[in-house]
Amino acid sequence: NAGVTQTPKFQVLKTGQSMTLQCAQDMNHNSMYWYRQDPGMGLRLIYYSASEGTTDKGEVPNGYNVSRLNKREFSLRLESAAPSQTSVYFCASSEYIRSGGAGDTQYFGPGTRLTVL
Amino acid sequence: EDKVVQSPLSLVVHEGDTVTLNCSYEVTNFRSLLWYKQEKKAPTFLFMLTSSGIEKKSGRLSSILDKKELFSILNITATQTGDSAVYLCAVLMYSGGGADGLTFGKGTHLIIQP
Image (cartoon, rainbow over all chains, first blue to last red; front, side, top):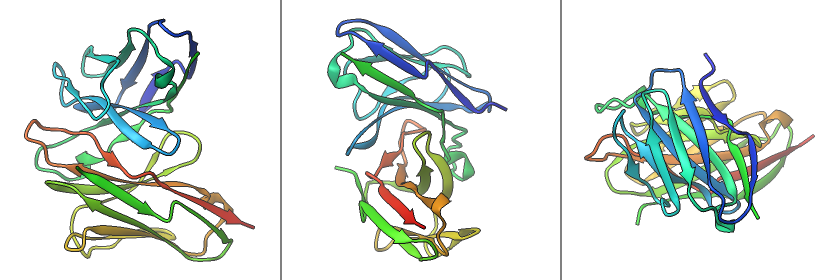
């Protein structure tokens, strides 16, 4: 099992350009998440998808859109990149069972380091 | 506002020392608390805690949760240079809509000197 994979690993954009970050998981998990990590800020939730067909905003959704393409794939799109979106982006997934337990554990992909000039 | 606070933010110790990392939280509808280790790449899972007073243990690492006082600690005994990393504490809350994201603390940057 590859776990959670992300592409690309690195990306440099100019202000105003658009791009899509791809994420896929092979653990048959129900829920998927996008976080960004900035120095001194910790990891913050951008969007999440509790199950196929649903998406919800997290703490910092402005400037982003997401698509849950199928159970395996969850993409993050920047329509018009800004320097403030320079960050490391992590995708994660979890089994998530309503009653709780080990399914709460979120597993992270290797990250995408994005620089917006 | 929900928040997770870790202390100390950074810590430098010598190999062989024992360290205790702290995590306090103020959240609504607590569901579980998770610890992760991050070494310049993706966070890797260490422990998940849901019940007070039950210690989770893996080798030299252990963790416990106190739901009355709203904190957790992560202990590392006989530290090694390979333990150098950022340790992240995160809390998951119950959400009426189902799965929700984790709320993270800012992490403790642990450096183990030989």
